Amino acid sequence: MAISNQTTEKVRERADIEEVVNDYVSLKRKGQNLWACCPFHQEKTPSFSVSPSKQIYKCFGCGKAGDTIQFVMDIEGIGFNEAIRHLAQKYGIEIEESQQPSTPEEVQRHNERESLLIVLNYAKNHFVKNLSSEEGRSIGLAYFKERGFTPEVLGQFELGYALNRWDALMNAGKEAGYDQESLLKAGLILEKEGGKCYDRFRGRVVFPFHNLSGKPIAFGARILTKDKNQPKYINSPETEVYHKSDVLYGIYQAKQAIRQKDMCYLVEGYTDVISLHMAGIPNVVASSGTSLTENQIKLIKRFTDNVTVLYDGDPAGIKASLRGIDMLLEGGLNVKAVVFPEGEDPDSYSQKVGRSAFSDYLKEKSRDFIRFKIDLMWEETKEDPIARAESMRQVIQSIAKVADPMIRNIYVKEASRLLEMDEDLIHAEINKTYLSQQRKEDWKAKHLENTSTPEALLPVEPKKASHKATLRLQEKETLRILINYGWQKISEELHVCEYLMDETAELEFETPVFKRMFSQYKEALKKGVLPGTDYFLQVNDNEVKQEVIDMVTHKYELSELWEKRFQIFTIKEADDLAKTVYSSVLRLKRRVVHKMLQETLQRMKEAKEEEITDLQKVYMEVKTYQITIDKQLGMVISN
Ligand code: ZN
Image 1: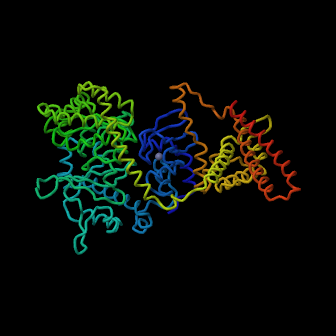
Image 2: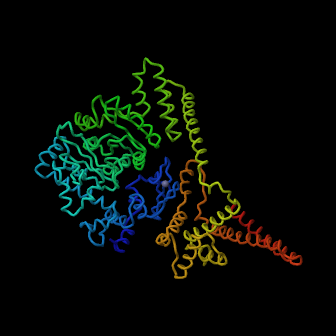
Image 3: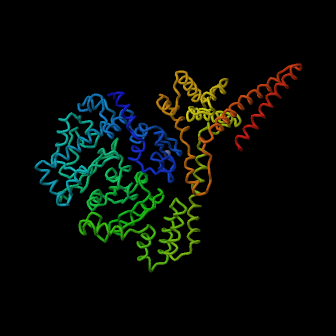
């Protein structure tokens, strides 16, 4: 199902990279660019940058880069058409094409992922609608009302009800045009022996899990009767679109608030999330059933560096989940914790004490993880010095997980005070932890080396490789200047592009991708177009696109921070354009000269005696030229 070019054009025009990326990670401005920890790879300091003026993103860590559409494709794991559809929806742009898929044939044509999302959305609507049926009102809605869930909360979380029948959803779904296969794949129905199918969720209130863009991807369902043979909660199975360990319940509803408040509450169950919302605390998510995973932490880290974990008042349960705190620390987050009175969880406690007392409680009882751990272990290890030493070691090991050395230091001081232990001793203990980690990593590295591929063990010709690399850099530099500054003037009547084209007329680019770009550049110039970033971003050549993005983004823009902190001033290239262009030309010429020298030397080796003198003269001439270039280059660089 194709989308019209006009729609794509409109999306390109309207979609703003900053707005779109901000839906997924929290961007912070530094200089001209916006920065965040990369959503595509694990990292603790931001190397993912977004340039609002160029409308592109680029990660200096993993190299992912592209424009707004590419970003949506990458982060949602969808194709070009789906990305356009997604952006069109966000910006209220009408999609010109045949209508949304509704018949089975149309659904089939969609890729599996997309069709699962459509089926799941249908099921969500079905469950919501059930709330107005007689059974739904008297059981489902009655339960929500009793819990004090407001209509706003019901709508915001799209809560629903599954009728207490074996085939309610299945039949309705089939009637609406969804086949059994899709319903099965979406985890909405189950197959009995003999091939007969039945609804997974029956006679339960239903909580949809949403992805970051607000689409339902799975369901959790709570039973309302006191049937001991039935589990209290059941969840969707893992599907193409739902991986339990990657999902946080409530992230879609919370992301904006987490970003604004720069803090995220982490709770256990989905009813806890909703209770907190109703208590006026919208920045909350739940790991929901699983113990915290690395991907869930990464997801939080996209929006904030600060997490407060809310623990049920159950000491045994808390101890079992302490590992979560270390994982959060390892993930580069600042961690606080709140414990509820014995026997209470966030849900029950908020209902008991009411909205304002509850939020006061969170504020008053939130402690940093050191205090929290010490409080947890101190009392019970009072009489047992060995157990106490062990608990001290655990606190220190948690501190060792803190990635930022400045923050780590603050915690060392805090621990020193609370544990009445010398700071140096704590540092020594932390170093010991690092050393043993280092040993493990060294061992791993060694063993990995031995299993590396045979190709990697082959000797490389170092000279050849480095010559090629230098060449690549020089060609890239020339194109970079052309694309960034081609339209600028270096003298009264001379543009950068004219000067560079003239100077490089006799040069052949050798790196394939730059060769292509250079000839595209020349062609465009002939047609009277001066190609800039936009021009190359629309070219249907991914390698070219990546290179262009690489050329127009530089990490140096980070240096504003450095300037402030260390009074280091970096050269602002555009201010001194002529110099940059000139040195680039000199480098290219030097390359030609170098080649000529090599060739002359070669010819001298093969030459007859009478030719030698002439060749020597040529060699000397070229050599002089090279020296001149080097001198000029030296002046350009040192000036
Ligand atoms: Zn990255």
